Length: 269
Image (cartoon, rainbow, N blue to C red; front, side):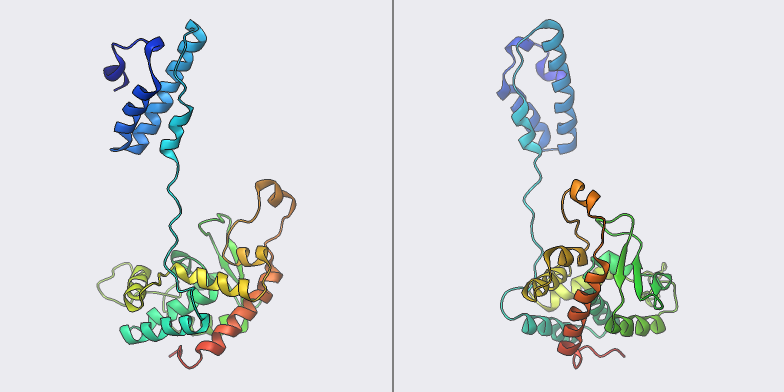
């Protein structure tokens, strides 16, 4: 590919625009190939510069092609009154589904503030009521696992879910069409989006994070509740804590708030 494009061009005559146009044309089709091609081309040109003392084009700006796109935030009802927004989510969900598991799953997601797949993969063996710890084996950001403090409200919900499940996971599918028996969490997400405009499943985490901000939960503790990695690698090397006890206090406040707000709406049956 490189040879075909620059076969009749001397290295000393090569211009930045020629390379840019070449890489851009590949990038439009396959970004990975474009990145690899640019890497190979830079090595060839650097070799020509060192061995043959040739003037080569500056390709440093080419990396701008591969910058990650701006983060697109998930839809979340964080504008206006938070109490009304949370209530409206569950009322809309109740009106648009007859599947109690969807409501249970969403309420547990509000309690835990974890990602959808992390909630769906919780197994009974991960729950330790004696030490009051729920162990998440792996999250998107924490490959070594994450400890969730079990509050009174979370224990109430987990015990209820355990009695409903006859499998290893606390959420299983009872649909005969699902051979694996795995609970289809994406269906909950789709129903949530359909039930109320402007709210995605992932946006539940944004609601919880906003509540913590409004209620004076320290930044590091609130971020840790969402399993966000806080600080640089150097900072984390010296500050070796997961804020477990601080998170327990924060989650107790959050769970008490949710229970009092939704006790007449989210009825565990």
